[in-house]
Image (cartoon, rainbow, N blue to C red; front, side, top):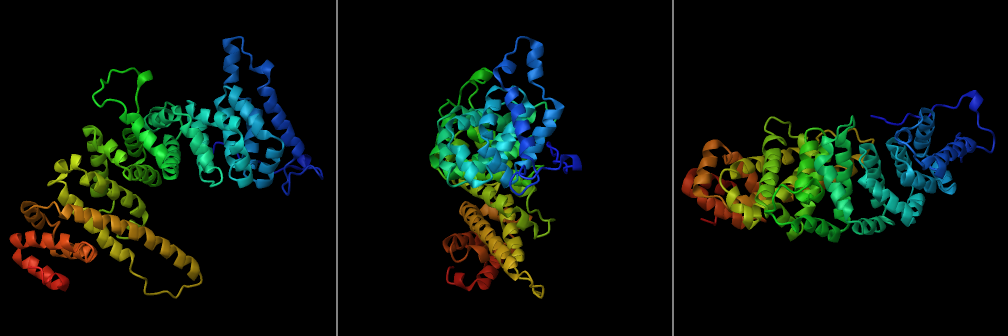
Length: 477
């Protein structure tokens, strides 16, 4: 939903005088000065003193005419000439004053939104980021209770964190403000309970992107956030007051993932990537598996995704192209949890065969996706196609490597009874075993050989056929 209206074309009576244009645009400097002056008046000392409840209620509302004008500035700020002019006019200082003093949610949202647009341009982003006071005011917006303002603040932060020149500045500021951890966790775990007509999923996705970027940029910050919740005893009574609520990063990420799951695949991809980043450090894995409930919730959600939602038997193989990145993250986390000593015993047996079935189906679909089209007569965009293909191959290779590693881990835990059950139910048919071997060899030869020994005890004929199909295994009897 577009919250700010597009600027209307200037009428003949609004024709901009020569010399009054902003850069190469048709926007008027004089008009823009007037809007910014109106903002200054809003936060002037005489207007910010409230003497009654009625005055305070008025401060929460925004005059319709001013809202339309400032929304027009919001749209205009996507133009670099306008953004540079706003910067030269010290508009960020005006917006900082509004954010520091105004209680009007809509006005605060628009001001942060304009700053977010301006930050898309490198020179302005560096300038905004170097202003310590403005930085603190913007970070303070993360404590806001208004979802649209939170969304624009998250968008601005993500823009700045994506700029190499200033990313470290924002990471350090966030580290110096520990309360931001609680605020972000609160959003991830509670935003869908907000009683507002606003797409909460959009906010969850954007906040997830911020967390993903932060963890990717700075492992130390990720460790600090992991340990924030871990410092709390696991057996603490649940009757603690809301003010003393202690957030743990993994349950908050899981809650957000559940909320975006059915509505936004890209959002789910973001939260799965956060979980994957957590598993790159020992503390992160422990944060998942140390608490039995958290470990079970993580496993159940991810297991359900790969076994009942993604890449199903009735899906066309090409769907893997759409799901490859999220599947890579999910399998990576499942593999890490599966390999951990704390969880491994609970996961053996009944979960193994459905996972094997899903992993082999992914590998089968991958073979289909990697087949080159026979007709390449339409080659007028050959370089673009080659670039896209290379990118696809890269992501598919990552998914293949993760899938093979996870599959080899499961194969190592299979018992004779599980193999017999897999043969009976179809998860370990000749075709599927052949696909598994094709992908596991030669890197996981010992694992395949051990599996064949067990298979030989259950079905000598199948084991013999597989040895014939893979000559490198014939010597192993």
